[in-house]
Length: 277
Image (cartoon, rainbow, N blue to C red; front, side, top):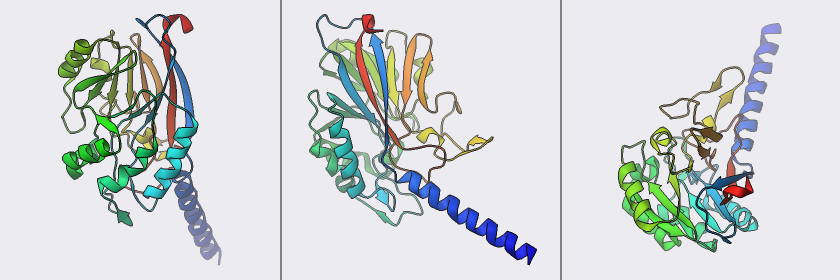
Protein backbone atom coordinates (compact mmCIF):
# COMPACT_ATOMS: atom_id res chain seq x y z
CA UNK A 1 0.00 0.00 0.00
CA UNK A 2 2.84 2.40 0.81
CA UNK A 3 4.35 1.97 -2.67
CA UNK A 4 0.95 2.40 -4.26
CA UNK A 5 0.35 5.61 -2.32
CA UNK A 6 3.78 6.90 -3.31
CA UNK A 7 3.09 6.09 -6.96
CA UNK A 8 -0.27 7.86 -6.83
CA UNK A 9 1.29 10.86 -5.13
CA UNK A 10 4.03 11.12 -7.75
CA UNK A 11 1.49 10.67 -10.54
CA UNK A 12 -0.74 13.45 -9.19
CA UNK A 13 2.26 15.70 -8.59
CA UNK A 14 3.43 15.12 -12.15
CA UNK A 15 0.00 15.84 -13.59
CA UNK A 16 -0.25 18.95 -11.45
CA UNK A 17 3.13 20.17 -12.68
CA UNK A 18 2.09 19.62 -16.31
CA UNK A 19 -1.16 21.50 -15.73
CA UNK A 20 0.71 24.38 -14.09
CA UNK A 21 3.25 24.50 -16.93
CA UNK A 22 0.50 24.59 -19.56
CA UNK A 23 -1.33 27.30 -17.63
CA UNK A 24 1.87 29.35 -17.50
CA UNK A 25 2.43 28.87 -21.24
CA UNK A 26 -1.06 30.16 -22.05
CA UNK A 27 -1.10 33.03 -19.54
CA UNK A 28 -1.31 36.64 -20.70
CA UNK A 29 2.23 37.86 -21.37
CA UNK A 30 3.91 40.03 -18.76
CA UNK A 31 4.62 43.57 -19.98
CA UNK A 32 8.22 44.31 -18.96
CA UNK A 33 9.47 47.87 -19.20
CA UNK A 34 12.84 49.45 -19.90
CA UNK A 35 14.29 52.88 -20.60
CA UNK A 36 17.25 53.15 -22.96
CA UNK A 37 19.18 56.36 -23.60
CA UNK A 38 20.93 56.65 -26.96
CA UNK A 39 23.55 59.08 -28.19
CA UNK A 40 22.74 61.32 -31.13
CA UNK A 41 19.05 61.71 -30.31
CA UNK A 42 17.66 64.70 -32.26
CA UNK A 43 16.84 67.82 -30.25
CA UNK A 44 13.18 68.19 -29.28
CA UNK A 45 12.44 64.68 -30.57
CA UNK A 46 10.08 62.94 -28.11
CA UNK A 47 10.82 59.58 -26.56
CA UNK A 48 9.78 56.61 -28.73
CA UNK A 49 7.73 53.87 -27.09
CA UNK A 50 8.85 50.71 -28.87
CA UNK A 51 7.13 47.42 -28.14
CA UNK A 52 9.12 44.22 -28.72
CA UNK A 53 7.48 40.83 -29.26
CA UNK A 54 8.94 37.59 -30.56
CA UNK A 55 8.33 33.90 -31.02
CA UNK A 56 4.59 34.00 -31.62
CA UNK A 57 4.75 30.30 -32.58
CA UNK A 58 1.13 30.19 -33.65
CA UNK A 59 -0.10 26.57 -33.36
CA UNK A 60 -2.51 24.54 -31.26
CA UNK A 61 -3.14 23.95 -28.49
CA UNK A 62 -1.46 26.88 -26.74
CA UNK A 63 -1.35 29.64 -29.38
CA UNK A 64 -4.26 29.61 -31.82
CA UNK A 65 -4.88 32.85 -33.73
CA UNK A 66 -7.67 33.67 -31.26
CA UNK A 67 -5.13 33.91 -28.43
CA UNK A 68 -2.86 36.10 -30.53
CA UNK A 69 -5.87 38.34 -31.19
CA UNK A 70 -6.25 38.83 -27.42
CA UNK A 71 -2.54 39.62 -27.11
CA UNK A 72 -2.84 42.16 -29.92
CA UNK A 73 -5.46 43.98 -27.84
CA UNK A 74 -3.03 43.90 -24.92
CA UNK A 75 -0.38 45.46 -27.18
CA UNK A 76 -2.81 48.14 -28.36
CA UNK A 77 -3.49 49.06 -24.74
CA UNK A 78 0.20 49.93 -24.30
CA UNK A 79 -0.14 52.62 -27.01
CA UNK A 80 3.26 51.96 -28.61
CA UNK A 81 4.72 54.26 -31.24
CA UNK A 82 6.52 51.35 -32.85
CA UNK A 83 6.09 47.55 -32.87
CA UNK A 84 9.09 45.30 -33.49
CA UNK A 85 8.65 41.57 -34.15
CA UNK A 86 11.74 39.37 -33.71
CA UNK A 87 10.66 36.36 -35.76
CA UNK A 88 9.31 32.80 -35.40
CA UNK A 89 5.72 33.42 -36.38
CA UNK A 90 4.60 29.78 -36.44
CA UNK A 91 5.41 26.48 -34.80
CA UNK A 92 5.47 23.04 -36.38
CA UNK A 93 6.14 21.20 -33.13
CA UNK A 94 5.48 17.47 -33.15
CA UNK A 95 2.86 17.73 -30.41
CA UNK A 96 0.85 20.51 -32.08
CA UNK A 97 -2.87 19.79 -32.15
CA UNK A 98 -3.25 22.09 -35.14
CA UNK A 99 -0.98 24.10 -37.40
CA UNK A 100 -1.93 27.27 -39.23
CA UNK A 101 -0.82 28.93 -42.43
CA UNK A 102 1.43 31.94 -42.08
CA UNK A 103 -1.39 34.11 -43.35
CA UNK A 104 -3.68 32.83 -40.59
CA UNK A 105 -0.91 33.18 -38.04
CA UNK A 106 -0.11 36.85 -38.59
CA UNK A 107 -3.56 38.18 -39.60
CA UNK A 108 -4.31 39.47 -36.05
CA UNK A 109 -1.30 41.83 -36.32
CA UNK A 110 -3.20 43.89 -38.90
CA UNK A 111 -5.20 45.41 -36.02
CA UNK A 112 -2.05 47.19 -34.84
CA UNK A 113 -1.52 50.67 -36.26
CA UNK A 114 1.41 52.21 -34.38
CA UNK A 115 2.43 55.73 -35.33
CA UNK A 116 5.90 54.78 -36.56
CA UNK A 117 4.94 51.45 -38.08
CA UNK A 118 5.69 47.76 -37.59
CA UNK A 119 8.91 45.99 -38.52
CA UNK A 120 9.93 42.34 -38.37
CA UNK A 121 12.77 39.95 -39.01
CA UNK A 122 12.30 36.27 -39.81
CA UNK A 123 13.24 33.46 -37.45
CA UNK A 124 14.44 29.93 -38.02
CA UNK A 125 10.89 28.49 -37.97
CA UNK A 126 9.80 30.98 -40.63
CA UNK A 127 12.67 29.94 -42.90
CA UNK A 128 12.00 26.25 -42.25
CA UNK A 129 8.31 26.67 -43.10
CA UNK A 130 8.33 29.12 -46.06
CA UNK A 131 10.18 32.43 -45.95
CA UNK A 132 8.43 33.78 -49.04
CA UNK A 133 5.00 33.09 -47.54
CA UNK A 134 6.11 34.67 -44.26
CA UNK A 135 7.19 37.85 -46.06
CA UNK A 136 3.92 38.04 -47.99
CA UNK A 137 1.79 37.43 -44.89
CA UNK A 138 3.61 40.06 -42.85
CA UNK A 139 3.42 42.59 -45.66
CA UNK A 140 -0.33 42.00 -46.00
CA UNK A 141 -0.69 42.64 -42.25
CA UNK A 142 1.11 45.97 -42.57
CA UNK A 143 4.49 44.80 -41.28
CA UNK A 144 7.73 45.66 -43.10
CA UNK A 145 10.18 42.76 -43.24
CA UNK A 146 13.88 43.56 -42.89
CA UNK A 147 16.46 41.03 -44.06
CA UNK A 148 19.97 42.37 -43.51
CA UNK A 149 18.46 45.73 -44.39
CA UNK A 150 17.39 48.88 -42.57
CA UNK A 151 14.50 51.31 -42.42
CA UNK A 152 13.78 54.65 -40.76
CA UNK A 153 11.12 54.95 -38.07
CA UNK A 154 11.08 58.52 -36.80
CA UNK A 155 14.55 59.24 -35.37
CA UNK A 156 15.51 55.56 -35.38
CA UNK A 157 17.38 53.60 -38.03
CA UNK A 158 16.22 50.02 -37.52
CA UNK A 159 18.63 47.41 -38.84
CA UNK A 160 16.91 44.07 -39.34
CA UNK A 161 19.38 41.20 -39.06
CA UNK A 162 18.26 38.01 -40.77
CA UNK A 163 18.26 34.77 -38.79
CA UNK A 164 21.65 33.82 -37.31
CA UNK A 165 20.45 30.38 -36.19
CA UNK A 166 20.14 29.31 -39.83
CA UNK A 167 23.24 31.27 -40.90
CA UNK A 168 21.34 33.91 -42.88
CA UNK A 169 22.60 36.92 -40.95
CA UNK A 170 24.89 39.49 -42.56
CA UNK A 171 25.93 42.04 -39.97
CA UNK A 172 28.14 43.97 -42.39
CA UNK A 173 25.30 44.47 -44.87
CA UNK A 174 22.93 45.46 -42.07
CA UNK A 175 25.35 48.04 -40.67
CA UNK A 176 25.93 49.40 -44.19
CA UNK A 177 22.18 49.78 -44.67
CA UNK A 178 21.88 51.61 -41.33
CA UNK A 179 24.68 54.00 -42.32
CA UNK A 180 23.00 54.60 -45.67
CA UNK A 181 19.77 55.95 -44.17
CA UNK A 182 21.09 57.81 -41.14
CA UNK A 183 19.29 58.08 -37.81
CA UNK A 184 19.89 56.70 -34.33
CA UNK A 185 20.75 53.03 -34.88
CA UNK A 186 19.36 49.89 -33.29
CA UNK A 187 19.42 46.28 -34.43
CA UNK A 188 16.48 43.88 -34.42
CA UNK A 189 17.54 40.22 -34.57
CA UNK A 190 15.82 36.91 -34.04
CA UNK A 191 18.75 35.41 -32.15
CA UNK A 192 20.84 37.31 -29.59
CA UNK A 193 24.00 35.45 -30.65
CA UNK A 194 25.40 38.22 -32.94
CA UNK A 195 25.43 40.71 -30.03
CA UNK A 196 29.20 40.53 -29.23
CA UNK A 197 30.03 41.41 -32.85
CA UNK A 198 27.78 44.49 -32.93
CA UNK A 199 29.98 47.63 -32.82
CA UNK A 200 29.67 50.06 -29.92
CA UNK A 201 28.20 52.74 -32.19
CA UNK A 202 25.02 50.63 -32.30
CA UNK A 203 24.14 50.81 -28.63
CA UNK A 204 20.86 48.85 -28.65
CA UNK A 205 19.96 45.38 -29.92
CA UNK A 206 16.61 43.61 -29.48
CA UNK A 207 16.11 39.84 -29.86
CA UNK A 208 14.11 36.74 -28.98
CA UNK A 209 14.59 33.07 -29.94
CA UNK A 210 15.73 31.74 -26.54
CA UNK A 211 12.29 31.76 -24.84
CA UNK A 212 14.37 32.60 -21.74
CA UNK A 213 14.87 28.84 -21.62
CA UNK A 214 11.11 28.00 -21.65
CA UNK A 215 11.68 25.20 -19.13
CA UNK A 216 13.81 26.31 -16.16
CA UNK A 217 14.24 23.79 -13.38
CA UNK A 218 15.19 24.69 -9.80
CA UNK A 219 18.96 24.40 -9.22
CA UNK A 220 19.50 23.14 -12.78
CA UNK A 221 18.32 26.18 -14.72
CA UNK A 222 17.27 26.23 -18.37
CA UNK A 223 17.26 22.89 -20.18
CA UNK A 224 18.15 24.72 -23.42
CA UNK A 225 18.43 28.28 -24.69
CA UNK A 226 19.30 27.40 -28.33
CA UNK A 227 22.16 29.90 -28.06
CA UNK A 228 25.84 29.34 -28.66
CA UNK A 229 26.46 31.52 -25.59
CA UNK A 230 24.36 29.39 -23.24
CA UNK A 231 22.67 31.52 -20.57
CA UNK A 232 24.82 34.60 -21.15
CA UNK A 233 22.37 36.37 -23.48
CA UNK A 234 19.35 34.19 -22.81
CA UNK A 235 16.94 36.54 -21.10
CA UNK A 236 16.13 40.08 -20.11
CA UNK A 237 18.29 43.18 -20.21
CA UNK A 238 22.05 42.73 -20.60
CA UNK A 239 24.59 45.58 -20.48
CA UNK A 240 27.97 44.86 -22.04
CA UNK A 241 30.76 46.98 -23.52
CA UNK A 242 28.61 50.11 -23.51
CA UNK A 243 25.77 48.37 -25.37
CA UNK A 244 22.33 47.19 -24.29
CA UNK A 245 20.72 43.90 -25.34
CA UNK A 246 17.09 43.12 -24.53
CA UNK A 247 15.94 39.53 -25.05
CA UNK A 248 12.25 38.70 -24.71
CA UNK A 249 10.93 35.35 -23.51
CA UNK A 250 8.49 35.44 -26.42
CA UNK A 251 4.79 34.71 -26.60
CA UNK A 252 4.47 31.08 -27.72
CA UNK A 253 6.29 27.81 -27.19
CA UNK A 254 8.54 25.42 -29.08
CA UNK A 255 8.72 21.59 -28.95
CA UNK A 256 6.17 21.29 -26.12
CA UNK A 257 3.30 23.65 -25.17
CA UNK A 258 4.69 24.17 -21.68
CA UNK A 259 6.56 26.82 -19.72
CA UNK A 260 8.13 26.39 -16.31
CA UNK A 261 9.86 29.27 -14.56
CA UNK A 262 9.52 31.48 -17.64
CA UNK A 263 6.39 33.54 -18.25
CA UNK A 264 5.59 34.72 -21.77
CA UNK A 265 6.41 38.40 -22.06
CA UNK A 266 6.67 41.50 -24.22
CA UNK A 267 8.88 44.53 -23.66
CA UNK A 268 7.79 48.17 -23.73
CA UNK A 269 11.02 50.12 -24.26
CA UNK A 270 11.17 53.91 -23.95
CA UNK A 271 14.00 55.05 -26.19
CA UNK A 272 15.25 58.59 -25.84
CA UNK A 273 18.19 60.97 -25.48
CA UNK A 274 21.19 60.43 -23.22
CA UNK A 275 20.26 63.21 -20.82
CA UNK A 276 17.15 61.21 -19.80
CA UNK A 277 19.46 58.73 -18.08
